[in-house]
Length: 120
Image (tube, rainbow, N blue to C red):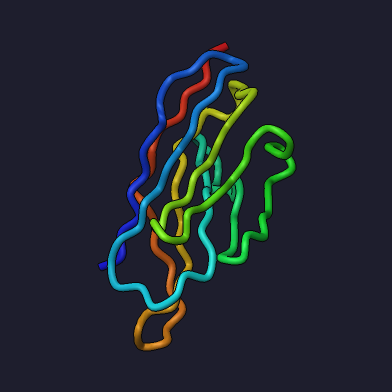
């Protein structure tokens, strides 16, 4: 069982910062990429940021210049540093892992989510 576990969410004021962490454990042959998604009430889940094993990154336009994704391959951990937070960043943030298992199958695993609330 592969299970990402997020931490670091909470309540912050407009303009504040938070750092999310996600550690992955389980039977993983090779990680392809790791990322963060978010889902606000009444909206679809959307990609926030993703990073490959090689360090290539991809960001949603709405967070470029404010959020930074990074990873520690040795610890199977991905981070999301969120600065200059806005009320519209309020959502449940989910960690996603795309990997190959030992049977060569490409799979996705999701964390349980962590709430981020930005007050105005």
